[in-house]
Image (tube, rainbow, N blue to C red; front, top):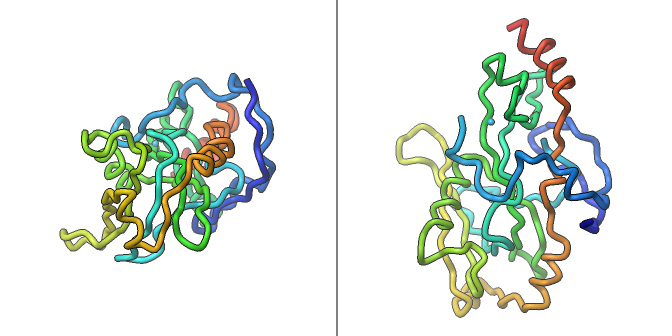
Length: 229
């Protein structure tokens, strides 16, 4: 089976430019590494970016963003090694089995990637949420709650926000509050139609968005940037 893609662009991840912009292309499902399966990475292991996409973000503290999950789970639950290279942190997907970066003691961090529909602005837009451990834990809690599962249940939306932790450590914590379809007028939004959702589903990203370096490439990175620490 093949999946038709549209053009996309590299997200701004704090100056991380490891992967050059490229087109989303038709790709065989068999090309997707077998260790990347739909679900959640958060909390299952103590871990990049692919082509450029529209990225879902909550920019400011106490900002509330209305959105909808397109699927009931992350399409790419992965782990990433963040390696300092020439003064910048660069992300490398952990290959899990016999990973050269893991072998040298670098601990990867989880990153759960979701297709979401951002309800901000005049028109809803398909975006990818690169959820780090904190928001992913909040999402997983909603996915496990009988009142809010599955995440993409009919008529269900969420308001996402982040606030500073009560622990006083400066860390921002995420929250997801469910919003019913009949409450959308409070947010100045209209319910998505079945046709709109179907169109977004046709455009949805899958795990082929993840760039996975070869073991030899990761070995070279490990020898260059980790062995000299």
